[in-house]
Length: 82
Picture 1 (tube, rainbow, N blue to C red):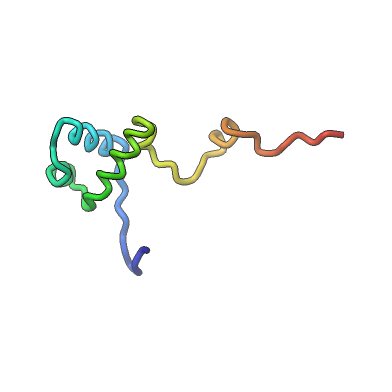
Picture 2 (picture 1 turned 135 degrees about the horizontal axis):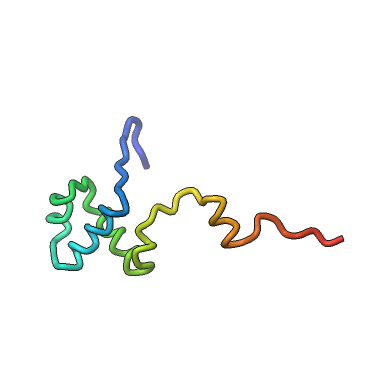
């Protein structure tokens, strides 16, 4: 749970890609975090899991779905039958 006044870091897709590729090349989580300035080493574990499950698309921020995504996945409303 977030604490009052806590500031969250967000990382670009490029940073996430670099981190994953560095890990795949054999660098430790600590080394990758230091090289890229990542504060939470646990983030690397999450990014690796998402990368293994979904590829590079798993690294993209999925919070808040765009209107375009909604129309691709499913229609906004069911057609009314008269």
